[in-house]
Image (cartoon, rainbow, N blue to C red; front, side):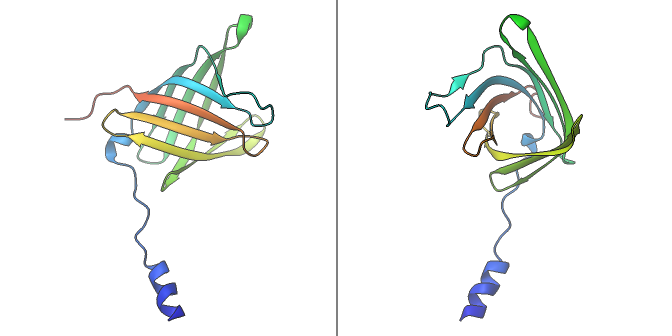
Length: 140
């Protein structure tokens, strides 16, 4: 009996992959910081902008801008590879500090063409929540 359950687990259907329309360019519309160490409510960061291009070949380009008070916009550029499995998403990239990985979850609303990405922060429990909308029309 144990062998049956083991075999059934190994033969389980793979996690669904995102639909073709998922792979497009998105515009950042909101960014919320969840800091569980302070007891404060989540903070919506004003002045978020930029784009995130997710390609079917597993590469991505991120160009994010945030208004940081009187110092003006802060620009972030990141290029690398991403993978999805179920509702998990992982971004792998190299920056000035070397190779890095960001892990989180995503929720894609195909009808509205909206994407929410929640990236795990530090210390554990903290999160960055990004709201994005597709910029390109669906292919005909």
